[in-house]
Image (cartoon, rainbow, N blue to C red):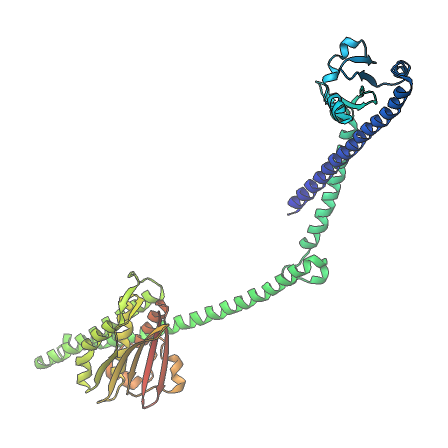
Length: 448
């Protein structure tokens, strides 16, 4: 930063100096050049008056004391006098621009340069009362020649300007960067810097506070994640151990010949049921991990939510009939932009839970509805309900509101957790309303 500031200030100072030098030179040169022409006109006025009074012969004495070239041209274009030499060398003068202008309008002027641009000639012509034209010409050094002669002083001034610019740039860069370098980024104090830096210091202070809060939040999240991971590991171990213990126990009894031949099918069926429970648990764990880690391979598409609900109800109807529970579907066809596989998971788990935690002879109602902004899926049951203190925890992994009832109906305790993460994956939201002993209503909202 210090180097960039130095270069910036140095370039600015040098550019300002060069611009000022050029402007001053041009202004001064133009001023003197305009003064030369005015001076030439003034001298022409005196000489014209003398010629009008004393004739052309007067000019012979005047030209000896001046560095001007004076030429007189008669009305017919003949050069009658020329102080620059013989009349033959002045034959071109009547055709000069300023002479023609003088014949035409009374006066004329022009400026010409030598072929090497080392000299500049100012010409002025005025018409006399008898129609003749008198022309004055004076040669001076051109701007290029003056610059060439002044090149050494200009170089000296330029060197001095560079030295001053370097010193100025170094001091300015240090003045700007030193207070910045002295800022304590951990505990900045705006009293230690100049006014222009105070907003920066205050911003650093605010960002430090924000970073500190975010770090504390991350620590808390990390702590909670570790706690959930520990709980999840403990729950998985427990859930896996229970069916494995049963399978191992039944198998051991059969191996040791402690089961009557007629009881073997019954024990084998228990082993089979526990194995199915184990497989279901593993599948749910894998499914939940895939949703949480965004490893779902299927793409989102426009999917008919009503059709999925209809298919799910047909699948679950036999299980509901065993408990004398009525399943019903209301609403209309409504497409949502989501992963079809996850929509199946959401609808199935919500309906399956509504059946499992219902009362015998109860009902489950599934409603698909639409508004201008949302498509709604509502699953309501007349089951055992959930107490208010448990509502916030029903979507946790392996959490069961009524553990004794859960043991009777089976299940892995991961259904609503899968629903929660599947809903989030599809950019939807979920609401739950429940009253203990009266039933539960869960609504999933998909944005249109």
